[in-house]
Image 1 (spheres, rainbow, N blue to C red):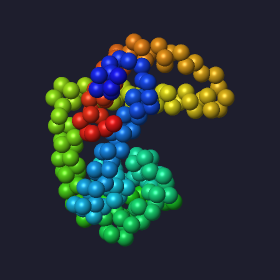
Image 2 (image 1 turned 45 degrees about the vertical axis):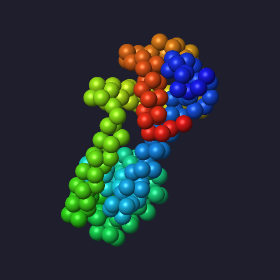
Image 3 (image 1 turned 90 degrees about the vertical axis):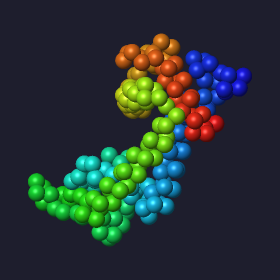
Image 4 (image 1 turned 90 degrees about the horizontal axis):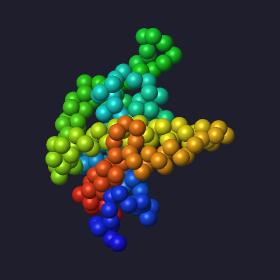
Length: 203
């Protein structure tokens, strides 16, 4: 049976049917388009934009906190920030609370660039969401929030298992059949992600 005719309630038959695979594919497509766009329009790499975006929203931040929020390896974050400081977009200052700590924030030039790029990012975000109705958008955001909580729980369980603790896989299997404890049916999530995957040209 072709993917277009396969029921969203059916158990995955191949790896590309898995929810994690579809989300990974969608995230990759989105990141690729964002990378090309910020390079073309603002001469920024995607890592630079993530760093500027986090500082624009949450500054001042330590390097460790910035790396965590931007999901960057600390060494990558350090090299990225060094380049942004050299370009006059980011400034580092000693923390008032801890003289040993360095806090990062945007310069005036960095703030001006942030406002331009975030406005453009909103335009791109609207392009991605344009095929969805307002109700579908709300459903998507609610589902992603629920899935994020679920993913953190699964990760915690796997970390415990890696440390030799006993974990029970059965609750996750039962949840996949009937929905999860938060009242969101996973079949609905699979259906919407499948639709999103088709809209962005996924396999």
